[in-house]
Image (tube, rainbow, N blue to C red; front, side, top):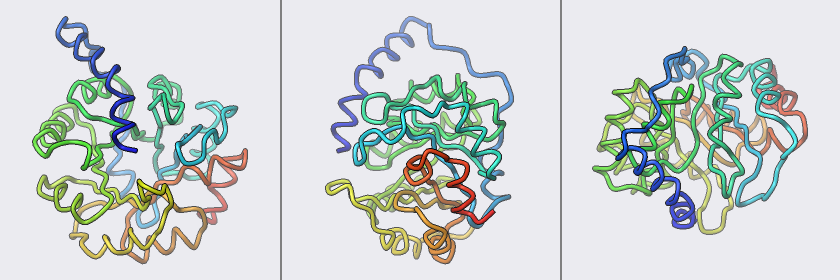
Length: 254
């Protein structure tokens, strides 16, 4: 799956490289950028990063009718600590413009996409996003190091996602502020929260850890809290029933 995602992203990266070569990359965003890391600390344990997710490879179309603005407002009113905004177009039916459209909610936003080249970090810095996702196994370590450096330069948070112990070892060598453990098997697309529990045994003090995929019930959230996670990222289960705000309240009991 990751190779398919890489291939789908290649044309967009090529366009950005051409823009950079011509000196035409967009300027960094100058408006308010809410603090993603602070939001997670202040709401941990059990901080919810609520995701605007219209479609996915495992589910197909989830809900193509709810607008970014509707969902951002619903999540804010239901107590989300932050938003995750899918901007990948081919497999997740996302768009970079959703970051601008959801910024009015005033919550920190994570750009969730396949960030594989430094030009994409520069592109992210031109949006109101407060953070972006880096998937450890999709880039060489030095590429990850460069993109983490750019994140610091632009005052963005970088969320480094891992799927197993090898990914975690690779990521931890770079001393990131945030680790996200994804419990999805990339071959079968099934989820197993035992993956998150197993990797949590390696969590060091002071590093923010997020559990992602397979979280659908209050018991799942509590299970991740007990495993040591500071936050959970939830998308499919919130977007599937037509009322993301009500689904988030049910998930958190608030």
